[in-house]
Length: 212
Image (cartoon, rainbow, N blue to C red; front, top):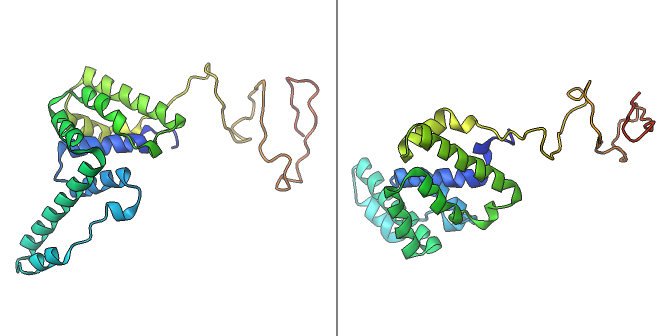
């Protein structure tokens, strides 16, 4: 599951951003989006002021109270996003709703928080871009259609590395049975945790490894 594109934190951030562009009234998704922008809890967890609590308590109808709470939450999250992005960039992102799906992603990749970006995440981002481009070419180019497709099919996609590429295959002893490799790395072989009931023999040559 570590190769699932959907498990990438950077991809999850981009998906949250797409969902926010689709519906900024979804406060659960907006809270998750703010949690990406602000790793520290106190920056994205809403604490109602005394004045807000008093205003809420003056309402007798439960539905009206919940509606007012949501208004306060929306204002809070909007303020947090503007603080992180800046007023001008926040407005530019709102304008992205007019763009095609691929253009949206091209313009938002730079917003991925630095703590979510590393060398291993870049390949997930690239494959996510490819998925969006392929979807836009074959089906549609709007956020709603893509998110529906992603929930049904896209999130199952994995990164498949061709065996011809320089890579390391991680296998159990059972999975590797009958296979040959020019180089084999055995973890924990020289530690005290190694299985003392297993005998390891020096290979006859550089390309051969015999286990008995």
